[in-house]
Image 1 (cartoon, rainbow, N blue to C red):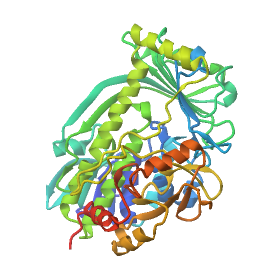
Image 2: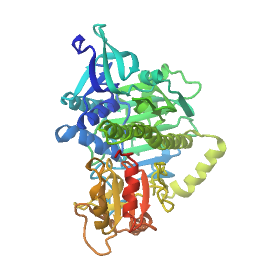
Image 3: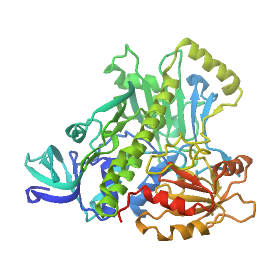
Image 4: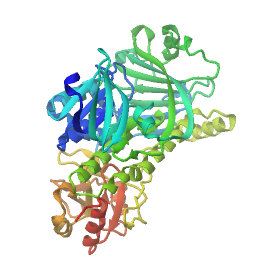
Length: 551
């Protein structure tokens, strides 16, 4: 693009064309917005960074790419993530996050899994291909934002890096998706709050066949958090290729904690890296794709909005990698913001709805960052008394083949956002890992069922709720889903889901509907409230209050 675009006005200008900026532009364009996407790099960053996507992110990306591009996307669902004392005890995890096996099948393994490994450069290339195919998105690749100001509209002076030519564009809305050092956030005057100390890692991405794995390391796709109290080199080891599943192959990642006396330049040498990975892979069979020192921060912005200017992704929050939630958090929160911009811009909702982007997303984001810090503390704390405690746990659990089950019965406690009502959720603290059997006979988690939509889960008959939501505007109409415990027979069909029949699954059905007949869920994993039969009008009234509709 060049000077012919001087003073061009758009509905939305997005600064930063990485995965979050590209996803935001696609979401907005699909809702009818005319978008300008400004990105300094002419091609995607060539090396992996984020490596894990959860079910919400995978479902959203699948919809944005479309069938043809999605078929090219390579990913492998992880089978397990384990915590082990030492690299010589990899088969004795004292803690294990592993989806259950139901009727001989691993939960969600036919779909996205509880987390899927992927290659970020490939994802960015596919997103760019989708962006460039959209008539409503104008791309300014190879351009940098120099100055921005607000005067009715948001004005941005951008410069084409190859020619030095600069010109102005403007937009009603401005989104800063420009990373941790965000230019947009700084111009907004938003301060970052630290939630914990930074951690330095050596990140190494390896290309190698599975045959390069050392004896005793031939695990299925997944991850291992290795405490290493003797060597004092806590390590994360990820195997991205499944034994018999997945399409992301020949890839391994290591995250080595750096110690105080490490020479950061020497530790990145090929000889040093070969020495570090030697216990896991035969160095003669590997290619070092990337090695770099990363500083993982735990930061969150205190102001996500100034007028019609917003930050998204790492420009808003940064987290350590121990949950693999950095990119996922950005995708989830960006989707939340786009929905609100759409409703306000169409004149359906009051402008104050835009403030609820931060109100709704901040508590969840803060909780994710702090939980990631906690998990990192489990890995990094190698003080003698903590090591003794781990050794005891290992003796009673890992050594006996009975690791502590870390696959959560609930995702982290959800936050009910004050939105003019107080949902009756005293009997629920989170979103249970409810499992059902799909029409094809595979066990699935309820978390992956239309995760980008509002849902009303009904204990049995849905007719009263369907009547009540009949007058809800289509743009915010929720999905009404019947959940059955299978006591009256039947199988999953359409919007009726039948629970898996293990005792623990039937217990979760009872727990979900304890003292309630309806459970109202926001996109993602946020529970908005629980209601009883006869409260259908109250449910709809309180649901609609979330959107601050006009008229």
